[in-house]
Image (cartoon, rainbow, N blue to C red; front, side, top):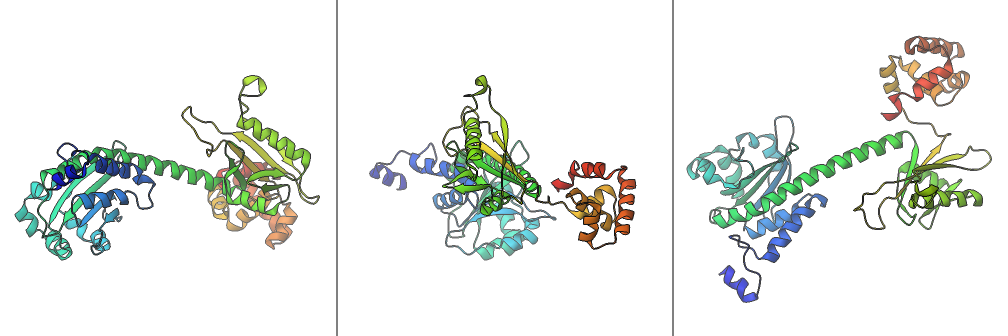
Length: 394
């Protein structure tokens, strides 16, 4: 009847043995590939699967539960009660017999363990039956880079068991879901690396601004935002970075233009990086600005892509380093680590003693101990060692 109704409406014929029109199948596949970009990954795709299979629940476990960590799962339940995720994570997952399915293959629970064994299982009786779940269909996905996911579809007691057509639907979408899971994994890795590098730049108190192909600001980190809000030397004007001094602004815009068109100058060679000093108020030192062009692949298109990066350094800002990191790295006492950081931030020994509220003789004693532990004999060498160490990356 469903197929006849589709033909009466003029829809496309079913996709193979799957009771979906081409339009419905296309919508489902699109939702699968857009899934990694959703706040709850694949929620839209799971909703479509639940609707097409007349299911009460559809669950995608992006990370199965274990004794030392909870599952990471996305659920589609429609108007059904919220699932008991917390209880499953803490206890019932260990009773679940519908696990370790054949890789990349769709099976029903009846095929795997049989209807009688399923109904007699404690997992069904304690966990699923109160939720009015009887029929279950699933597939396990394992990617080449080690990601393991579980797709589970459930129906209530009043619905019929999953049919071959139902299995066929999941079978045809499973390869697409597996590819989308790999994309999600790669995007997570890229985002983790980006956060790591961005956090390191922030801790070093380096302002970073990315510009698009028109020179407009795409993104800036908190350090750059603070510098631009101060409006001393550099400021944001109509979405673009401008220098206060006219001559410096002309040079800055030239460097940005050069970075935007790296093959237009210097005899056809790419202008990879350049720098400029920006004057501030008389009582403050200059800002250092590094202008770097960002490489694009041959397939990179569009005007809202990062094209130029500006790195802004204010020498008067004190880089953030953990006293505990210094102490552990060089085997210093807490007091010695505090003094070492003060010296690395440009203070003299007397200024550091005043800032730490210790006697100058005590500061000298700490300094001698620091020299001995780090293996240096001069304060300038000590500062160079500290500045070139990893303490600023933590």
